[in-house]
Structure formats: structure tokens, C-alpha cells
Image (tube, rainbow, N blue to C red; front, side):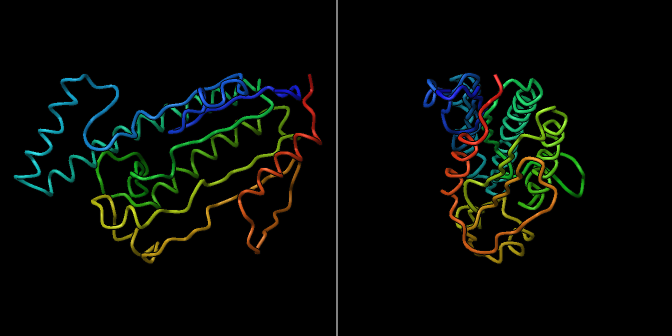
Length: 232
């Protein structure tokens, strides 16, 4: 903002709008699905008291059913979050009013809400992390199409970055973990999150095969801010 850039953010989990209030002119964030167990911020107090008790009773009778019920609950809340963030992100890009835009989406983070077999969203456990990667590809395609429709696309730098790798140590062995997850991950953690940078008017791809710390993205952004002042 100090350099005249109009800033905007749509984020998940972290309180961007309060933490960076002096520096963001247009901001939306949510963490509605980040509670543990069968409780929800949008539910009533009575529901958030009775639901865990009901879940405990089911676990005593049928642990397998309890796992399925909890997984379905997590998937329902996550899908609401994903849809909410996608709508706000697409609307923000469509208005084309911000010079610097930060998007933090919930995909492809587990639980997995997409099914490649059904080519649609699922309401039960059974999908893998690869299914959510397919969903990520679809959503990024929508965001990219919106960006490319802007007259400013030729002057736009696009950075797509994972905030961490697939946390197999956390998810492996949980009810949502699938055989496909086990085969794809080989049971190990890959510490290399994805990073893609598309420069203005870039046509040819280029791959950096050597280690490239993600902290260097900060330098990339600084260079963009210095070399491409906004058009006021």
C-alpha cells in the first residue's frame, strides 16, 4: 500500500484480515471447519454439546460406523469451506480491482471432497489425496481462466505455492487414508511443496531442478514490486 498497490486477500485458517489489517484493503478469511471432532462454529451450543456425546455412544457400539460418521461430518464442513473460498476468490479476481492478490485455499488439504471415479463431490470417506489434486487442478483452471480474461493478464505474475508437503505422518492410518494414498505416497513424507511461477507474457516453460528454498519467493515478490509499479 505504501507504494500505491491496491491489495486484497482471500484466506483460510489464518486470521489474515486482523493480522494484516493495516496492509490489506479488501480481505476475507474463514476457519469454520478447523475444529476437532463433531462440533462446528455455525452450530448451536446445544448441538455442540450433544453431538460429541452421540459420537462417543456410537464409538462404543460400532467404531467403524463412528469413523464413517465423523469423516462424513469433516467432509461436509470442508466442502462448505472450499466452496466459500472459491466463490470469494473468483469474485475478487473478476472485479479486477487489486494489484496484489493473495489467495490461500483449503485444497488439496485432507479430508478429500472430490471423487475422480464419480467426477464429482463426495459425501463419504473413500477418496484419496490424488482425488483432491484433481479438484485442485479444476479450481486452479477456473482461477487461471478468470485471470487470463483480464486486460492486465499480460502484465501479471502468477505464483502458485504449496505451504507444505503431503503430511503423511499425520493422515496415514486415519479412517480417511486409502490404499491409493499408501501407494502414491509410498508411506513417506516428501518435504518439497509445489512451486510454480508464471512471468508476464511467458510462453516457454522452464524447470529448476536444483533445491530452491521457498523463502526466496519473498525476493521474487520484492523484485516485482520494485520493477512494476501499479498503474494509477
